[in-house]
Image 1 (cartoon, rainbow, N blue to C red):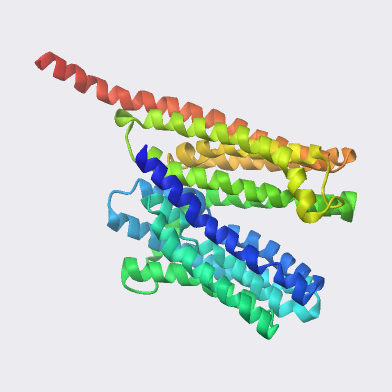
Image 2 (cartoon, rainbow, N blue to C red):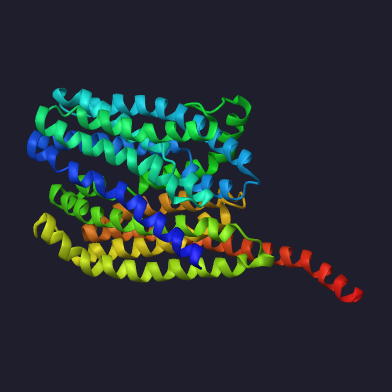
Length: 421
């Protein structure tokens, strides 16, 4: 338990610094460069976020488990090296496509900035967090992600204020996201990039197709409420959805921290040595987070939204109730995906659940828009319920089968020892 608490502290405090650091920089953009610049940056970040999910190719979900279950350091280096090339090639491809798209969507004077912001946001796919989770060492995040990103932010703030050149923001952000992985490569391989093994990289692409598709679909449809509110209900509803969504995204950080803390702890032991009990602890903690986080988001969300964004930009409490329910369902779903299905190679069930959520959720959001913004967010919560139903049934079935198989192997040995005694 002491080790678990240590990991929780490391994987909460360290990533939180990277999460908070940009909040000191972003208010400069609308206040110094104007709302048109702020809108252009926001559009580019939205495009870049989708590109980053595509470029990440499911490694955020599957990578940590594969590292945790690896036999030795050499195997871990091979996996990370393959992931570096797998993601890096897609960062270039998806980033360039996204840059072209975002530059076409913004005013002419912000096209270069938008293209660079999209490239910088796409580069976030090169994150080292999942590798740190797999090896159970939060110092990897601190040294190779938090420090480079924080330094880039600290340098960008005075440069933006002194030069009034917005280009510094995406350029330094891009450097911050790429510097850490390159430095980690120097530590692992004594060279800036890992050895290129074409056949292994192709196998890595094939192995991650299902989980990558699920993550891409999930990342895309969970962003649907805001554009749907804009198109179906108008600018006021879209603005209110954005306000609530900000708090929802912040709350999701808690699920990420908890799942990152628990994944290696659950998987590093066999059933004979207590994996079943650790699964139960993980489910219990995620259930507690679902109840506490969902309630807090529902009750405190409207208060903080009114304080930060104003009463006009704050939606009714029913909207926060929908986001709270979505948060709770996401927390309950996460241990089935991160600790059960993905480590077992059952990625297809994650894909089935995500496809079902998209097919049910998006039409339901559109239909429920007749009840306003709360109807759209209710549709989002319903889509998460679909995912929980699919991965919950599949995960429970696999856990029971895995436990039976594990103890079936142990039983004959125990019987034999008893006979000799």
